[in-house]
Length: 286
Image (cartoon, rainbow, N blue to C red; front, top):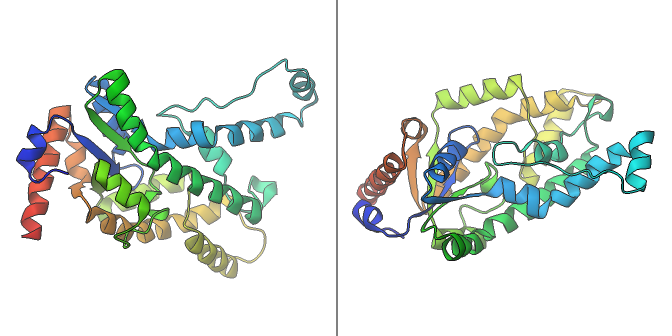
């Protein structure tokens, strides 16, 4: 989309798609750009949790509420309303619905139910990504935004085929926006693993990866599966699985380092960083 750093700097409309491991600055940068008043921030996770999975999430809340006699009576008479309150900064309802596989007595989901929810998330994520074009047009025509930042889910590399030049989702997205990989170092990965170990959170896995991880974990840990133990055990594997997939996606765009992103303090810093990344990529290709 932008033939050089200079072309990017001079472009009247700047559109980027940020991707990479969760926790390396995608949402931080996108929120900073939104607050500047000159960029439209499109959050894929927010779109998933509202447009595509909002009803599923709310219905799950209601199933739990129906187990309490008081809430059951109020729900049956339409006296209360139960819905999720997802925001750009709080995606807990979506994570809670996605859940963790394992022993139900320890808060886990039966593996069949878990896989069903994973599949729902995959379908929703693809649809939400493809909605980017609609929101680019909407942001410009309704609100006058000429700059657009797409804040993707960390699992984007799991729902596309990065090595397929004709992957329909990546082909559509790279025609609309400049893909930007925020790449972390081994030190970043270690810190992400440490943080995850302290507070393990649900995440999406590619079906083949999940099947292999579930089988391997069960072989090493016979008996009922502890949900938190399983996703802690799986997390480092998942990061290693995703890194080459992110790298393959980055061939369609540019790469910036997580440490560079951490130093971005203003929209102009971000614009300059992308210009430098484009020129850096051009030199590499030459």
